[in-house]
Image (cartoon, rainbow, N blue to C red; front, side, top):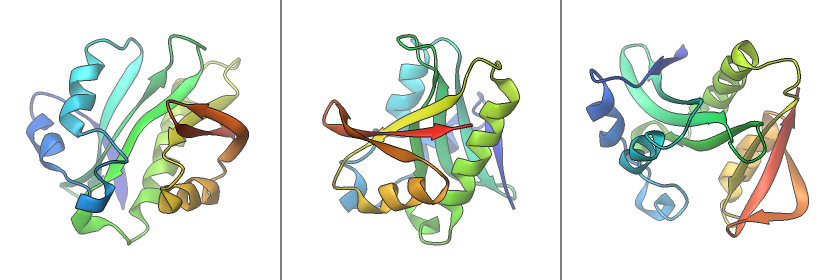
Length: 147
């Protein structure tokens, strides 16, 4: 069963060691970049996605300073663990975690992805994200989950 654990001084090396497939590298920033970015983001959480004791993925999410709503900035599953349904399960865990920390006024979670990343699009749709027609940020399709 999957679970989330906060990235700390004890597990950050595992997080930056995770890799997507080579053909996916253009779709997501490295976990090292995400952890560096965390230094400049308030109200954000870096979490390892664990299968038992093994970290198999990474997520970065929190309250965006521009719109004050929750965003998932990064989501990845290591190449050795892809295709097993863990991405979908991990997104549900992130949604559940946000539900526990959000205030009542927060009604949505937003994310974006490369329009050519058909797999990400399908996974996000399966857990309830809906594309916002015509809304692109930095050439990425914006998609919204509503509580």
